[in-house]
Structures are given as structure tokens and as C-alpha cells.
Image (cartoon, rainbow, N blue to C red; front, top):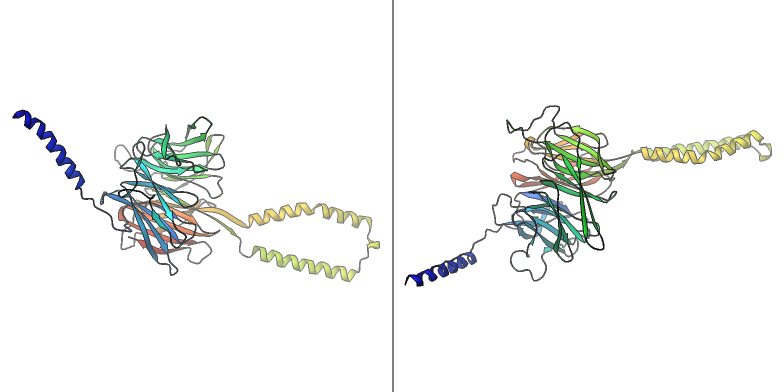
Length: 457
């Protein structure tokens, strides 16, 4: 009898486990949920955008990818959404805006979604035949986070925030083909077209990883070089790294690490948080300039701008026309005949002709100087409840967006900017822990440069 029970008990346990598992009740987020937003993307049509609700607080059993649209009256309209595995990390979108790749830190992998339809009727969807709430997760190393496509989009580079690995995914075969080792805690990765290298930033390492990822006939090769950053801080981490609009330099936001004795950030002159401008030359990192700021810094966004000095071209044209009229009058009055021109006058005219090229070059330089080319650098400062706005051309703080006086709290952390013209664009601000996000329009030529469009909450 005891033998029978010995075999029956395990069988009953297995049956009970399978039954309980199949009856699991999941908590689904509502459509358009704003729950710990970690990323944004604005489409090229200038009115559609998506945001990623990460479910970092585990309020639900899923994260969510949400598609929105700005209608003609400026209102924010919900279009549709997709469930994504919890906890969602970051996302990247293909150049044709048809594919979206999302990392899941909790499930240790990547999923991909599709954008169907045309502008005004976009829809988020998974591939046909997807079973369940989302497609099978492509497994990677633990805690994948920031990711980016290579130039021809045949490979997806996925970084890992826990141990600092780099996973290379073949987007056609949809499989991991290589894993390399970076430094601990990758916070961001970007691609530099000028050098052909990828750059990755890290938490508490004091280095930028310079990554060369190239495909040969035999395999896909990855080589990594750690570039130390010469800053007057003993311990610091890079929260965010971005490239300038002209591609010549990079911006990095540095935040000092905690004091080991007080477990607080130090803000003295020697260890203040900094916005650093640097460039890569001959595989070396060279600091161009730094700007000291205050606050516990979060992420950063960059909006390029280019604007001509108002009225400069029109005024120059008017002066030129007036000068030509005066010259014509003088010639009519003097009634100069070619036969009366002396040798000295001929030599003078020849010299004038030779100087034409120099004048044209000088005029080109003058026109170039009449343009201001730079970037607006937006930096989140969550503890100070504000977004710092820096003008790269002046290397100074231009303005700030403060939430201290708002009735609803906002501790901004994630930022995203999208350029729509020489002096216009959009800015997204995620108040991460407050489950709120703001959308702003930017117009450097308008009286109200930064205008709030709407709030997601």
C-alpha cells in the first residue's frame, strides 16, 4: 500500500501544478497606460509617436507599447497599443519606421513589433501567427537594456545593464550570433558615422567603450577599446551620451557616485555634476569643454538648430543694389570712353578682377558667420524637479523647465527630442516615478520658445 502512495503522490502534485499554472490570472494594463515610461519615438510624419511603459513597479504583469497621434487641434489621441514583456527596458525603431525592437529586463531577451499602415492610420501589431500576448522572446544574457541597429540594419546590438555584455543579433535569422564583454552597467549606446564605431556609456566605470563591430566573410567580429575620461572626480558614472547635430562631438552627462560614508551625492566645486563635450580622435577621447551644473542628473536629449541672423541677407542685398546704382551714375556723369583709359587704370581693373575670388571667399565666410549652428541640450534633474536647457554654442545654461510649482509632482528622468526643422522640434519628458509625461513643441524663432502641448497620465 505504501508503494502505491509513493507513486501516486508525485503524480497528484504534477497534476495540481499544471492545473494551477493554466489557471494563472494575469493583471493586464489598460490601453494607453502610463506606467514608468522609459522611452519615446516620434515618427517622421510629425504627428505620430510611441512611448514605452516599462512596468518597472510591477503594477501589472506586462509592459505596454503605446501609439499616439497629435490631431489637427493639437490634442493627443490614443491609437492602439501592444503588450510587451515586463520589465521593458528600451526600444529602437528601423529607418523605414516599420520595425520596433524592445528589450525586456525581467525576461532577459528581445521582442519585435511591426508598424502597419500609413501616416494617420498607423497600427502596432505583431507578426501573423503570434500565439499568446506577445511573440516568443529571443533570449539573451541577463537584463538587456539599450540597443541599436547597425547601418544596414542586418544586426541588432543589445547591451546589458547588469554585467555589461554586448549581444549581436542577426535580424533576418532572428538569433544571437555573438556575445562580447563590455564594462559593467551599460546605460546607452550610439553609432558614430564619421568613425564607424559604436560608443557605449557605463555606470560607475569612468570609461566610454569604443566598439568596432564589422562583418567579414567568415564571421561577425567585435573589438572593444576602453577610453578613460579625464575628469576631476574620483567616482562618477555616465547617465547619458548623445552625438551633436553636426556629428563632430559628443555630449555626456556625468553624475558622481555616492559617498561611501554618507551615502549621498557630493556637490562641491571639484566633484559637481558635469555636462562634458568630447570628441574621438585616433581612438583617443579628448575633452573639448565642460559645464558644471547642479542636481542629481538623469538622461539627456539633443535638439540641433541652425538659424541665420535676422535681416542680414536682405540688408546686404539692399546695400549692394545701392552701390551699383551709384557706380552707374558716376559712369554716366564722367562719360568715360575706352580709348581714354590709361595703362594704370587697366592694371587697376585687372587687379580688381583677380581679387574677385578672394571677395567671394570672404563673403562666404561672412554668410557662414551669420548662421548660428548648435544644439539645445536638455538634461533631466529629478531631485530638483526640473529640466536644464543648455545652448552648446554658448556652453551655458539657457533656461530650464521647472515643475516645483506644479500641483502634480514631476521628477523628470527620461528625455527624448525630435527635430522637425532648422529651429523647431519636439521634446518629451517622462516623470518616471510619478507616472506622468509631458510633450512640448520647440520653436527658437517664436516668442514662446517652449510650449506645452499635452500631458500623458
